[in-house]
Amino acid sequence: MVLNRSFFIRPALTVAQEVLGKYLVVNGKAGKIIETEAYIGPEDKASHAFAGKRTERNKAEYLIGGHVYIYLVYGMYWQLNISTGQKGYPECFLIRAVAGKDDIKRTNGPGKLCQYFGLDKSFYGEDVAKSQRVWLEDRGENCQIVAKSRVGIDYAGPYWAKRKLRFLIKDYQKYLAKI
DNA sequence: GTACAGATTGAG
DNA sequence: TCAATCTGTACT
Image (cartoon, rainbow, N blue to C red; front, side, top):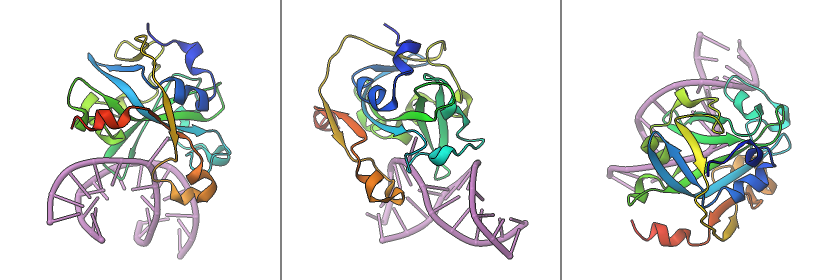
């Protein structure tokens, strides 16, 4: 079943965990989501929307849950986020890794999975609850969740860098072992 | 206008 | 350990 609006309008903290084990489907390719990070609103110092900041780049983060917030980092890699929560409140989660058919080494990083799925700025603001080319699917697979610290945000200070806002499925290492 | 750093990655 | 390479932000 395709995940609908009601799934995404909950807090990023909830959605980032529940979306693990679901499938990302883009242009006919599908992958099981195995790692995410939550960016939980204006008080989150690591978020692009910290202190309610709004820019041309991050405006999709303010849309009602279910919209694609995709942006370029380091000049070369796209990061796929999906907004959560209500309209006007900047929350989202970042999809950091999915498990594709067999070549996980091409989808085990946020930049790499976008390259694999062909995701770029043309998907900016896409509504995954309505889109015909990108959506999330529940295939009835349950999984256990492990929480870790987020990656690459040391600039946000020890409190936000250490908070357990990165989520992985428990057998994440098993997938990596297939490389 | 210039300077700079970043939610990454793969090669050395 | 480091370079690739673009964009928003904070300056001049």
